[in-house]
Image (tube, rainbow, N blue to C red; front, side):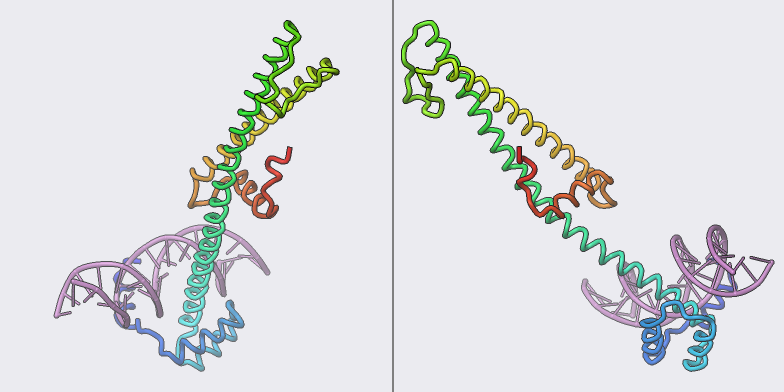
Length: 207
DNA sequence: TTGTGTTTTATTGCCTCC
DNA sequence: GGAGGCAATAAAACACAA
């Protein structure tokens, strides 16, 4: 708006409404945010304003109300996001710790397998003090070898699965960090929703 | 007092609905 | 096509620090 007529119109007519007028308009807005023509005329008569002014006031009020609502929704979403980000970071650290544990176990079983091979050649008892978790039953050696192989495969599986989960989590985190303000992608939002709605975190690595 | 940021009133142009 | 709503914007009114 930059026309001369508009400027003149503003200079001549623009004034703030009185407290009483505002109060009455606010009250009406509380029950009816889009009043029909008759009500606008009624308010105009009652408050000594033009019906056009009433219409404009309601229009501006709706706009203010909408932007306030958006602002409120944003702050609620942001606090929810911040909360989830904290939870996510804790889970990520937990996952890393578990990965390290799996790798340690894997090394231990590899070591144990190596000793078994020596036993096949030398038929000497194992040093049980070194790795009590994987004690061998000398009366059932074949079964023991099979069990250790199974265990190895399980650890392989655990390790791969944990790595996959960490990878997925990092992808999700990256996509969240890439768009923290103006709305995350649909996938990452669903990811957050699931985390929030589930309320439980252990399902991530509930193998 | 004055410069500056915010709020409020009003206009304009576009869109939708009947 | 006219009425009414909405988004964007202008500009007056207001608040307030320096």
